Every structure is written in C-alpha cells, then in structure tokens.
Length: 119
Image (cartoon, rainbow, N blue to C red; front, side, top):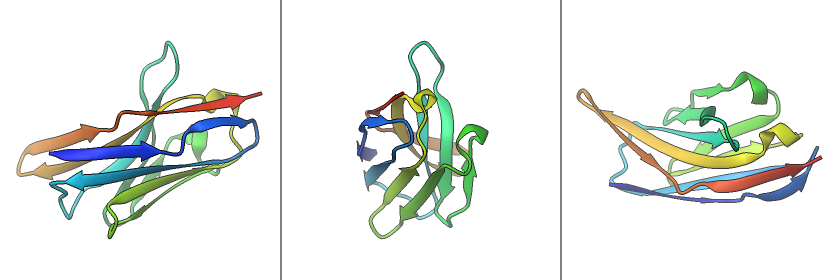
C-alpha cells in the first residue's frame, strides 16, 4: 500500500502562483511515476503533468510553459509549481502514484486538493 498526502491548494487570483506537494509513503518502488491530475466541476479527470523516478516529464498542452512538475526521490515527494494561473485551471487536483510489478500496475490516488483561480 502507498499513501499520498497532498497540500498547497487554495484560492488565488488569475495570474498568480501556487505550489502543490504530494508526499508518498508506504511500499514505494524505486521505479515509479508520480503525477497530477485535475477535475473541474462537470468534467472528467484529466492529466496535468507526470514525472518518472528518473525525472522524465510529460505535460498537458494547456499547462505547458506555465506549470512545472518536479520531485525529490529522497523524500518521495512530487511538486507542481503553477504559474500564470487562469480561471480554467480551477478544479480539484489529485496526486497519483503508480508502479509496475511484472504485468500488474499498482496505482494510488491522493484525496485531492482544491485549486480555485478567481478572474
């Protein structure tokens, strides 16, 4: 089992910045992927950014150039620096951790943290 604790959400004005953190604990695999997903009201959950344990990253087109995902493997923590926030970035942000063992994927989600961007 892996537990994820997210922090850093809140209310910010458009153009502002927030930094989200996601701390993982439990049965952490050395090789894993952590990422951030978000869900706006009435919409499906979507990928925001992911980072592998060797720091390869992938971003949604809508956040490229504004958001930066990073991680500290010693702390098993992933971060999402969000700059130039827009109202459309509003939603619940969820941290996800997953790793593979043979042919089985083990995936865990955090409880979510609310990000609200006021225009």
